[in-house]
Amino acid sequence: MTPEHTLIQLTDLHLVAEPGELRHGVDTADALARALTSVEESGVRPAALLFTGDLADAGEPGAYERLREIVEPVARRLGAPALYAMGNHDDRAALRRHLLGVRLCGEPGDTAPLDHVTWVGGLRIVVLDSTVPGHVHGELSPAQLAWLEAELAEPAPAGTVLALHHPPLPTSSRLSADIQLQNRSTFAAILAGTDVRVVLAGHTHVVSAGAVAGIPVWIGGATSYISDALVPAGGERTLNAPSVSRIDLFADAVVTAAVPVGAEHGTALSAVQVTQRIAEFGVA
Image (cartoon, rainbow, N blue to C red):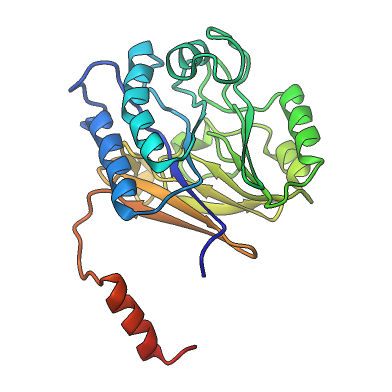
């Protein structure tokens, strides 16, 4: 069965302005480039590339310029729009000016929340800015929630995908629990009964899933570094295990998958061999 739409989510890139500069021992620009190469080499042609925040590590203009240089050629070759959400490490004015220009969401230098809608065929993708300037936690203002409610009042033919940085879920991480989305219950009440099929988020650096108002929530793994969800004694540590997320939207289902970047390959089957293996199953 072929999905109606496939999305690729990349999150928590933490790009820096200077080549060779590391974050937690990681060359984050190289990690992003390798992640995008893995997408291209897969042969998948996604409907969109979704970047769910912390695009830059410190909101530097040069980091956004590097991001554009890395992403835009790949997006053109894939024929897919690159859609960006703000993260708490990002700077709204710098992101608009040095990454987006005047393509959307106001003039360069504008500091209003970066909320926007993109249509891919009948699929609606809503990107919300959950950041609070000067703070690490997330929150959606009454005006943003009213805008979202009005947008979702009219269902989309293929449904809606909602993307934001701060997950609308609780967390077992002591560190992340102090910087989570503050008004989750209000957000959930607005989503209840709408056509939202999946909520995509980042922020925690932990691949995880849950639900809000009965809607699946997927927290993608970072392309930079992963936070260990099994660290002992309530501490924190990082893992060098970057990943991207693949989201397949079928007519009657949503399937999400974390795909490790740079993992050692094991057994491989060609397309012909896969067809032969299916025939061996004896299932029509």
